[in-house]
Amino acid sequence: MRKSLLLVLVMMVAVSVFTACSGSQNTGKGTSDGGSGKEEKVALSLWHNFTGDDLRARTMREIVDNFKNDHPNIDLNIQAIPPDGYKARLKTVAAANEMPDVFLMWPGTMTKEFQGGDLLQPINELLDSKADWKSGFLPGSFDGFTIDNQIYSAPMGLSPTSILYYNQAIFDKYQLQVPKTWDELIKAVESFKSNKVTPIALGNKAAWLAQSSIISSLGDRVTGSEWFIKAAAQDGAKFTDPEFVKALELLQQLQQAGAFQEGFNSIDNTQMEMMFAQGQAAMMIDGGWALTNLSANAPKEVLDQMGATVLPSVPGGKGDPNTTSGVVGVGLGLSKKVEGKKKEAAHELILAMSGPDAQKRTLEANQLVSYKVELDESKVSSLFAKVYKLMNSVQRTPVYDAILSSAGADAVNNGLQELLMGGKAQDIAQKIQDAQAKSIQK
Image 1: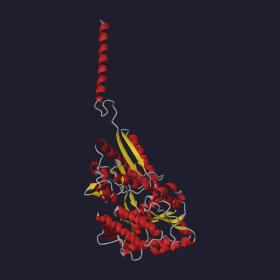
Image 2: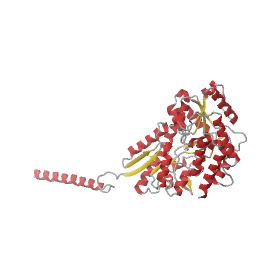
Image 3: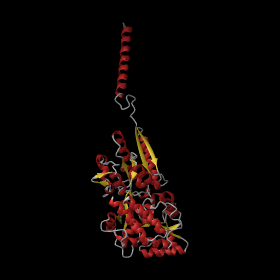
Image 4: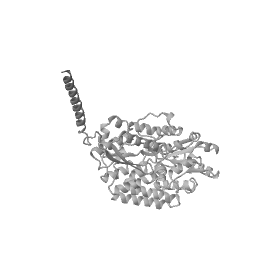
């Protein structure tokens, strides 16, 4: 009797265990893979240009790697394209309507052209679902990414494009003051040149540098912002007007005075930055993006000798001299074709790369951001801290290629290369005028 009772109890336990196991297996059948318990993978493509060895590029690649590790269900196909070739590659796939799912893009003209080509979708839904993140951006941060109240990206940085970097040790050696006026700049150039010191490092191989970092700010000194906005819109101003021709002539005067090293059109901006970092030039006119490269590669004693200011004032100029050209930084665009689970994955990636934690890490990588983050100066270079303070004391003016059409910006880029090789200012102004006017008429 006892044996029979014991056998019954054993059978009851076995049945219970089998039932429990069966129930556990059945709950897995509701998962997206049909019962394996694993979440279905989502394929997502990402294009970016964080290929360098600067602190910002390294940080962004780390953020992407962290995202991949934290999201094993997302199969991320990454195209990392060097900066000088990135825009051209992106415009090529845009022309063929073959955009990657998520991609780095610029505010202003690029956003307008991609939106006009029906290649983008807004991210309002994502921003509104993360109210704390959205409210953390500085005023005006979304302006360059906004069309008809639709926001197409969130800025991942802040890019003053025209900063006059200088090596104080070299200035002290030749008993010179950092120039505040155009005449002082020319005299400093002449003095350095006579002492066989390169006055200003320039790397204009990719053509955009002279446009973004020099003429955008120098032009504003001469013409003022209002004139430029009208000329870009072909509304009461033209690039053949005397004030713009004067701006071109001032840049040419700088070159003719011997400001730049030989071969400036054959090296890129990264090589230019290394030249300045190694003390081979007294000055460099570059954007805020240089900080992360300089901070990563220049010795601390050299960094501590570096300073930063805005371009000098010009005689009779209509623009405010206490300004620098600049825009909010790049942001991630979302292809119009992305939907469903892929869209959810894309939103997670955009948040990971431009959310509050990414903004903090970006700032600590010596890259300015358009986000409310308190700077811990112990985590950045002394030069970055100086530029951070400078940017809080000056206003921002337009960058030419953020306002001009692509054709107009190309005409400026190519025209400045020609100007610096001896071309006539009036002829180059006419080419810029023709290109912008033609593109506006379309």
